[in-house]
Amino acid sequence: MKIIIIDDERLARQELANLLSEYAEMEIVDQCSNANDAIVSIEKWNPDLIFLDINMPEKSGFDLLMELEYAPKVIFVTAYDEFALKAFEVNALDYLLKPVDPNRLQEAVNRINAEQDSIPDLLKDQNGRLGMNDQIFLKDGEKCWFVKLEDIRLFESEGNYVRVFFKSFKPLILKSLNTLNDRLDQKHFFRVSRKYIVNLSYIDKVENWFNGGLQLTLKNGEKIEVSRRQATKFKDLMSL
Amino acid sequence: MSKAVSYWIAQVLGWGTLITLGLIFQKGEIRSEFVLEAALFFLSGIVITHFYRGIIIKWNWLTLKLIKLIPVVLIASILLSVLFFSTDFMMDYLLGRRPVILKNFGDLIFQILSYAAYFLFWSIIYFGYHLFEKSREQEIRNIQLRATKNVAELQNLRTQLNPHFMFNAMNSIRALVDENPEKAKVGITKLSNLLRSTLIAGKKDLLPFEDELDIVKDYLDLEKIRFEERLNFSFDIEPELLKRNFPPLLLQTIVENAVKHGISSLSKGGRVFISANMVENNMIIRVLNSGKYNPDKRSKSTAIGIENSIKRLQIMFGDQAHLKIGNHAGEVRTTITLPLNE
Image (cartoon, rainbow over all chains, first blue to last red; front, side):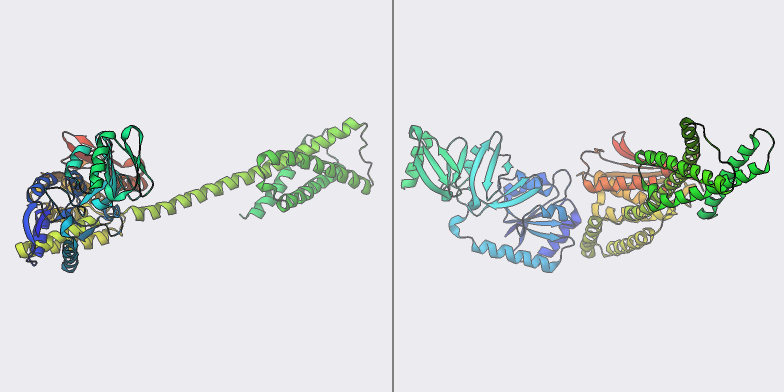
């Protein structure tokens, strides 16, 4: 398992590396002292897991995650920051408190290993695109989420931003719908118009609409129009 | 002197003065019947107003709003005056003297109104005194309230070691155990010293400035272990000030902020410089740190730390002490001014 440690303090990185040396399967491919170096390193190494400090100068751990295309598996490491951790929904993340308790680290590593094994191959990365089990990091004001792609039903373009619809939430991310579309798995996500990308498994009903377009009704009742140009492609895709 | 005693003294003096004035300005020579009449006047005045006081207490007139009290007192004065007049009349009759026969209704009204003026005057003194007493008691209560509030607040405002710092320090020391055991030992000693002295200092109102400096030095040494080359610090302290009293952990709070914003938020780190000088009768402490002060961007905990320090100084020294933060020559400068009264 490829690992990157990100912390602005040398001794903190050192300490974590010492603790991880107990685990043969954990290969520390890089250590970074700031968010900018980490972004480059993550893109280079494509790690399975990162240990991430939340409080870092200039860019925090959260800022780093928001700049990534997708969020790798993350274990947050922080000294004492209840406030930051409360931003997450219950059990949505794994975190370790400094100084790290070796037993807690063992638990976290076990959990990561278990998750890694349970992912069916079908859902894993193909051709550099994101798998349905990959998660993205979302932040809306004080709230944060790690959301798996399979839980997202809709992406809506809003200027330079994309609004992400999942459960009852719809935070914005600073990305274009085009770049997002290039990264999404075409078997599961479909660009229905200039404005929307829909998760196919959330479609409940398909109806003919004006001008040869289509109207989709999602499982929660939301209605989305498919443009005429995309309707043909959509019909092809569905008939297959 | 108890309130009851003052009341009776006021009664006797008040009515006594009135009678004496009446006798002095009496036309002609003073005859014995005048004295008797004056004595009766004196007695019935006291008895009637004492009865009036009973009513005031029983019906709680002291708690009435002024706007209600004024008509009540006016009516009461007139009624009392009628009572007084009737008593006077009856006394004269009982003593077998010729009562004063008023010639017409207008004279009667005039007589009653002039008596009413006495009772009105009596009421003004009585209610005025109580109003004054009440406001004074209120003031004392306010002062007591403020004092207890200040004590409680001071206890709250005394800072404790920031847990974030503590855990980070222990984390660094844990890493040092393998890398540099000697340094790790020093770190543990410093951390224990710091813990102990902040526990002790936190219970005191004042401590010698040198003790505060020891705390700050231990703190900075520990942060130096954590931030390594990113943190540099130096002191320039006028030796004269070492024995002077200082509010515990006040400088520590400021230095902690300096490290948090000047060092831990800068990738390259920076420096902290602490100076203390005597200027006239004041102690001027300056903390300079790298970085930029931006009051809008500072975190909630920082804002509270600074505001608490300002409040603490305000409570302890009033307007004689100040705490200012601002940008100065590319750095953040915090200035504490304390009076050196002792």
